[in-house]
Amino acid sequence: MQVNKIYQGDSLELLKKIEDKTIDCVVTSPPYYNVRDYGVKEQIGREQSVEEYISKIVNIMRECKRILRDDGTIFLNLGDSYFGDEIKDKPDWVKAKQKLLVHYRIAIRCQEELGLILRNDIHWIKQIVNYQTEESYGSSVPCPVQDRLGLNSEAIFFFTKSTNYYFNLDSIRMPYKESTIKKSKVNRKYSRESPYKGQFMSTNLNPLGKNPGDCIMFPLERAREKHIAMFPSIIPEFCIKCGCPERGIVLDPFMGSGTTALVAKRLGRSFVGLELNAEYVQLANKRLQQLKK
Ligand SMILES: C[S@@+](CC[C@H](N)C(=O)[O-])C[C@H]1O[C@@H](n2cnc3c(N)ncnc32)[C@H](O)[C@@H]1O
Image 1 (cartoon, protein in one colour):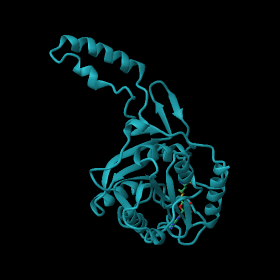
Image 2 (cartoon, protein in one colour):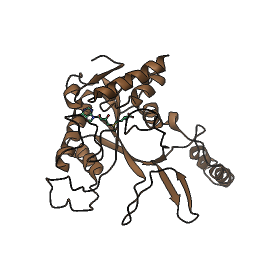
Image 3 (cartoon, protein in one colour):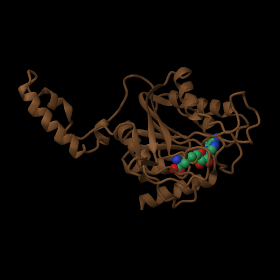
Image 4 (cartoon, helix red, strand yellow):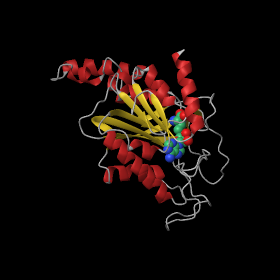
C-alpha cells in the first residue's frame, strides 16, 4: 500500500493488505454502536447484537496491532451506547435503558485477547460543570432525557504494542497554573533548609510545562464538511504529536472526511486512510487538495 492515499473499501479487508510492522501510529474513531447510519452496506455499527459489533472492532484492532511497528501506538476514540429496541439478538444483561459500556468491553478484549497494553483511557471532556459555582466549560449537544444525566465525555484509549514505545510527552506539555508555580517556590525555600537541599523543587516542575493528565477538554468544532461524525482536528493533532515520530506513518482505518490525514500532513507525517463510503473518500481527497493549495 502506498502512503498519503485513502483506500475505499471495508477496513478489515484492506488492513489485511498492509504489511506487518509498517505503521507508527493508529488514530481512529470507528462508528459507535447503534448510533449513526453512514448509508453504506457492510458498514460497522448497525449489527443486530452488541457482541457482533464488539468482535468486529476487536478484529480490526488485531490487524492494527499486526501492522504496527513494535514501538508503535494506537489511539482509539470510542463512545458508549444505550440499549435500543433495534437490538434483536441480546444476552440477559442487555436490558431496556441499560448503558452498554461497549467501549470498555472492547478495551478489555484488546487487553485480554490481543495483548495490547492500555496506557491511558483518556477522558475526552466536551463539557464540564462546577456544580458548586454553577459554571460550565466547553459545549455539548442539549440532552432531552429526564431520567439520567447527559453524556459529556467519550474515551480515547491509548494502547501500545510493547513496553518500549515512542511517546513524546514534551510535545503536549501545558503551562503550569500560577498557584502551582507559587507553591513550588515555597517548597524550594522549605527544601533549602531541609537535608535534601532543593531536590524537592528541582524534580517538581518541568521547565517545559506539565503533563496534561488524562481528563482533557477537546472543544467540539463546527462541522463545515458533509460528514455526520467528524472529530475535532485537535484530537488527531494531540495523538500524532505525542504518539508518532516526525516523518512517521499514521493510519486511520475509519478515515471519514479525512481529518486524521489532514492533520498528519500538516504535522509532517505521512498517512494511510481506509474508508467504506466512496463519497467520504472524495470529500477527504478534496480537503487534502485544498490543503496542498
Ligand atoms: C466516526 S466516523 C469517522 C470520522 C472521522 N474521524 C472524521 O473526522 O471525519 C466513522 C467512519 O467509518 C466509516 N465506516 C463504517 N463502516 C466501515 C467499514 N466497514 N470499513 C471502513 N469504514 C467504515 C463510516 O463511513 C464513517 O465515515
